[in-house]
Length: 435
Ligand code: PMP
Image (cartoon, rainbow, N blue to C red; front, side, top):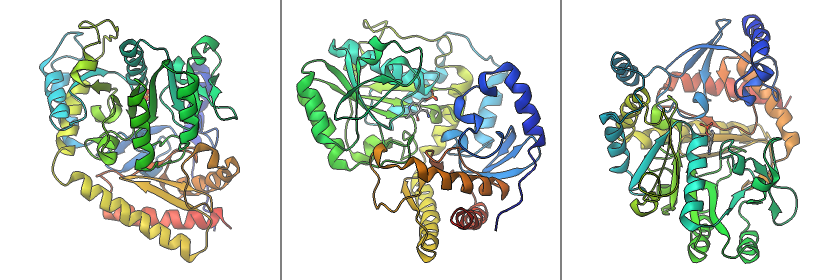
């Protein structure tokens, strides 16, 4: 049975006001709730796995700020580290010991990078990685995959059209065609298409970039064999392989998707999880490749807020917890049990929905297909079911991202009780979606 709609009066009032200040009333488009029911919820605070909105509604949070809050909201160690730094200064634009400490924590626990550069967002990390790949190889073209999101820098805001190989068609006004022409977009899991690209653009491809596990357009889990193919074909053509681990880094394990696939990419990018939720990103590679970055090399990249001391303090606290033995095993077994329970329910009730999962990430796909590995396999019409489910979930106190293409995340702050409560809510909401 449908639940009664929660009160969104204050959120609606705030949204109306926000429209006077921001395009669409938001500072990042998906927050506008365009593809789900109702006005966006204005969040007032979070604690552990819980969120409260401006109307006082409480939710169990599976969005976790789009992934980084693997320790939940208001983690005491992160909070204390941030508070301790606040009294010493917010920004110096000069080196601090905190940067060394966080870099050491990352590099000594991650065999895939030898040197790192901190930046302020995932977009910046990937944009810089692309420049580095171009500077290193002295080539201009990059290959990306349909359904992989890499932030909003010009070279990466391109999408695939139909056909085997498509030159980037811009996904955004304001991206010069000349930029988009340097980006080649092909489908995931299609070896022939990539082989053709390397024939058509011989000696022109600087890099192939893929999300560690594509998780921005559903959860498109690739086979190891395909990732190995990417590794081999890039290496044999003198191109670099970039893993964008903004979601998977420190989420699939401390060493992310590189470790999961046991494959050494040439450049890796990381995102906000490094800052425990503060604005941070990073890219890393071998010392040899990173030697091309300014001031050692000719590839320029800089930032006043790079290595910001408050963000570094938060990151040290967060990653120190993640580096503890058993952290990921526990989180993954919790996620597995959660997903298995839902799968059992789905089977018992003959619902046409699948749950794909890896690590502590999961995604509801309203499909009968056993496996979804490309963006083209996702039926946009199936998002209608998500829309119904999302409304029910919110009305019953469970918060997921406001689009059916988004994945859910489980954090270490989700208690057994939280998950039991959420399971009951999700089951009821699924039944409404299929009623
Ligand atoms: N790469 C990937 C894989 C992402 O998921 C995202 C955003 N979630 C980005 C890059 C861009 O990161 P940001 O929004 O922090 O700029």
